[in-house]
Image (cartoon, rainbow, N blue to C red; front, top):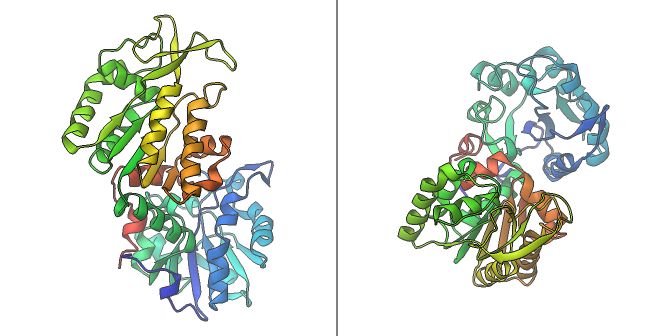
Length: 396
């Protein structure tokens, strides 16, 4: 891979600045989900094992360059200590005297947590002076925050040009998974793209049709493609003004030899609520007073066949209104099929995006996928084929 990892760095006796994503949900000063904190443990423990002194750089919320006490990282100290099993020293700034003092007080095995980088206006402006102030604290820079890698900020991009830099364990795992899925994948490759709107995923669809062999389109997006084919979708969610764009994507896919898989049957209802009376009809037979809320069983069976014939699967977005049963049926069934093929060793499956992670957790199969990215925006931009500044800055 064109970037270094912890295995390539001499960390013994060195202060190691580690950009992490510990932007965890907090209610009344209490962390309600420590998943992101737990994910940084392998990187921090490896640095300590190699004789390095880890100093954590992180943002929290959107303080927009102001010191906002409710967005301080200080409440995370006990949770970090519990997860890491090491003493954590908190610094009230990420540069200057408070940060230098905290670093100077480090004993063997100690970890320093610097205050919210976004308390400085320069962070989101990728200010080189702020980056230099951070870099002055350490001797090596490690980026372990793939989820923030699509932003060119002082703590993710500028700093990587000042110090010897590498990817942390979480970043390394993410990049390897993504490379296996789209960079140099085992073919055939299938992508599942769902969600409400075509307009929010134009770049994604445009990039994928030239990279994958099959593209499964679900959710409200599929309705827009049905409209583009002259099909009446009743009261369904659809961007009718995007029909011409959908036609262009279909034409581009045909030219690239990418098969687009759209629903052949759908689940319709007249109410959008749990347990609503529903029926399965052909995709071109939605009653004028009904709405399409899920893909039907024939479509699910077809998607299953496509998965069986594939070697690699990339998934972003549900196939229907998965939050409300029974309109989670298609998403659950397709996810379980992908999980089964992955368990059998017949499929490399990579998924990402907020709704996707929620849908796979709901289907009970998140643990069976080869890799699940919690990176959200960075995962989407990577799927769109965009360069991620935080990753590019690590390139050797």
